[in-house]
Image 1 (cartoon, one colour):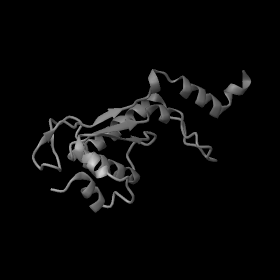
Image 2: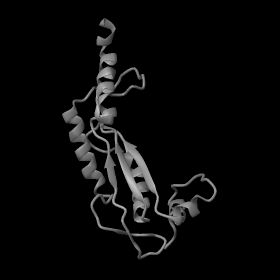
Image 3: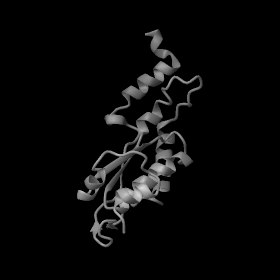
Image 4: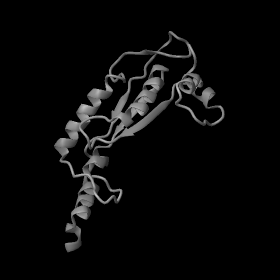
Length: 158
């Protein structure tokens, strides 16, 4: 079976790469992460490619980390667009996080004992996926509360 970098290149995931990245990935298990936005109750088509990339890393014995932006979901869309996404409650964000985690669990192994590495074809490797993030960034939502106030204008009246 081919190594991870060869597999990713063959599948069209690689356009340009740092020299020796293939050797780096083959030398030892690595950790890779990707962030997802919980402002919708379901993953979108655009999420499929990064999830599949995480899956290939996991199948090769690397550890994928899924970053769920619960705090980001609480502050809406701070990009300055003319029409921002509506603010969601903590409960809505928690529900979205659970639904998206359930969808990701169809492709990523969050609980399994081991997987097969590409390099050896048979060597088991502990590489359960990890989900990090929630509705409370760094244990506090003070920034989220500040951002909500900035969006709605109450901060101007202080």
